[in-house]
Image (cartoon, rainbow, N blue to C red; front, top):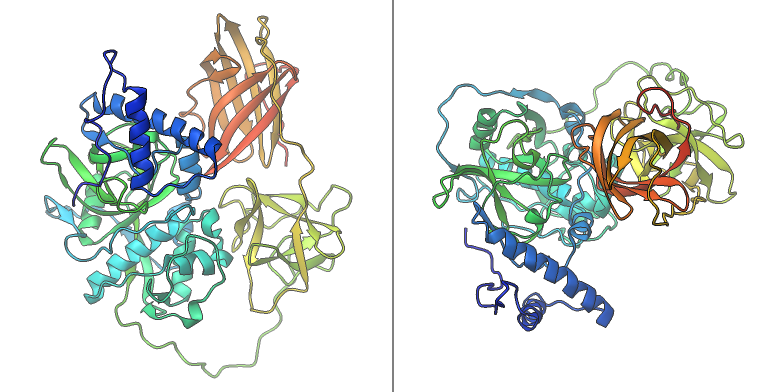
Length: 590
């Protein structure tokens, strides 16, 4: 691989204090604008982009001065803040289990290390099984590129033919399987779709980096229907098993890629603590040992274009225990393809149709519906459901067995405005069997079932407009010195409570607990206060919900929790409440 094209840093004028001079930094930004064809709407946007560029430039200089095993560099993303970049270019949903990931595809067994001799290095990009690096653009479709990448590799190894497959087909056509196009998705849903349909070639169905209408019926076929026959998952956190799997072909993985080192990565072996909260789908295409640093690495193909990283690739440290660098070993999987799928079996004669399916045992099951429910589609989801009418704000509470999603008055008839109940979900796996969590706005989603026919349901529902104002946080006062005191609140399936047990001299301790989406149990955690922001490391006691910070709002006497569920940000206000004995115990709502 050739090194990615970057702007030279060494030629910049440095002041005696070791800082780049303002004029040199301005020139570097002007060169960056020209090199990458940047166009800004007005002077205000240009000024904000320059500020982000300056911060990233200083971060690059400081990191590279440490002589680590990797280097950072100016690329086309250098005018974006880390938070903005993460929200724009990562679009991977919360990682499901292996069974959820590949849905109803036949499970062909776990790939466990067979004690075979492992090659010292593998590079499928050099063996002709990897297509050129692609660019997802400003569309959260990384999941589609990881899906096509593993299929392209498996098909080339099986047939000898490397065919570039269409990510746009997955963006446009797999929404009924739970994906949200440019709004994010999962490789599991991409493979569920690939099992049921022929995969189009990239040339006949080109990528547009935006949501569109499915046009798969008129494309050229890259992999025929039936070519994807099953899957294998690789033993979790097992380096040898993953090496053995990669020696057989490219492997789909998910990583955490929301750190600034990933945004600005240029070359070398990335060996830093980048976390394991999976938010980005990528493709492992090989492994080896870096000749310059002597470090072992995984060779990973990204989907941010060839100007990022080392011609679109990154080397992640190999040998790190547990989930591995950036969580890469958490749940690797790969498809199994059949080069010559047989014809579909014709209709066999049989007995007359059996009896009608039994009536649903509870509300919110797959259509046909109960007598007090309406069968309807939900706008923007390509799915259907059974929805009972809202009685004020209450909904029937009986749900299908195993369902974690909670009934809420979420929907309204688009023609009459009447309100209806549905199962409110946030994370995959909370819906009834056969249903998926389709996002309808912000974090919240609704459980829908794939449509059983191309005919539209009798009713079309839309989300009830939000009536809750965005939370505010103002004031500059300190929390009370006398402890303990507590705050509690929640929304969308998660109630969070904070119990401050000590506070003095801008630092203290608190308990952060929660129930709903996941069990949060952070007890006696030390925090520091800077301005109104309370900062603590909660990474060992919070998983699906990523709490970035808490703010003390003295004017409202409340705490504002800033968090993410998967890639979606949320701010949840917690109101002052009486403290209970022991750690704060929330009331479960929704």
